[in-house]
Amino acid sequence: MSDFRFEKIKNAFERCFRDAGLFERDVSGGSLIETDILRKEGEKWLVVAAGINEGEAATLFPAQPKRAERAGTPLTITGGGDISFLFVVRPFSFPIQKHLPLTFIAHFAPGDDVPLVELRSGYLRLGNLPDNDVGLTALRWDLDSVPSHRYPMEDWLRNWPTMLNHNPAHAPSHLHINSPQVSAEPGSDLRDMSSPRNLRLGMGVPNPLSLILSLASWLRAI
Image 1: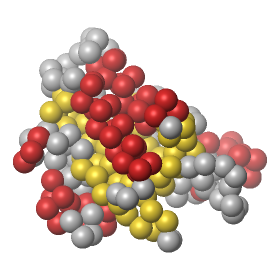
Image 2: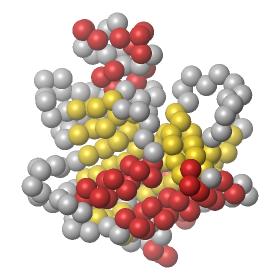
Image 3: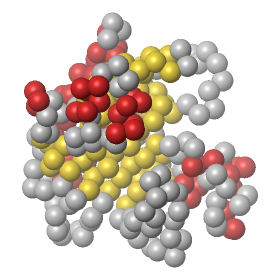
Image 4: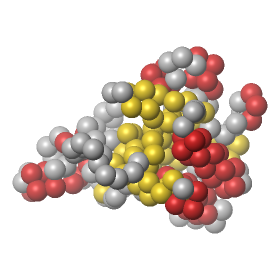
């Protein structure tokens, strides 16, 4: 990681998960995250991951088989549950040199001279929670541009993708709350439209650090 900004981003993620004080991971060395530099379309990206699947790990850590293996281990949460996540990011600064219709820009750490980052992809998934007062079983945030450009299943939304340039029922960045599993097929996009428990709440691209820390603050209370 020769670029000091990539090192700053990596260090910020490490400090963020460590200072949350809720997470552990059973890997050699006790690291809470796995990181590496990935090159795509001539650009460098920082991969930050834990608990990803085998296929993702092989793609994101192609030259680091041991790191790819460790990347499959999620974080465990004090009090029960686990958390898996993936952030593929790079530092971002204006002006934009080319037209980037699918660019996802987020605030990051202006106090550490990395005010903005671009996210290529990402998710954060909280699962296997013990019984709790709010009755929550799962919570996910996903950033995925591909499903967001498919036509809505709902007839009343058919005209909105033209207006918004994405499917509002499956926004590129969304918070997925209390969703029951509706398909056993990996990567399936099927939804039970009659279930009020299946909410994909469209949102802007969150600051990854704020997302992690706000989640940790909430986890301490449940």
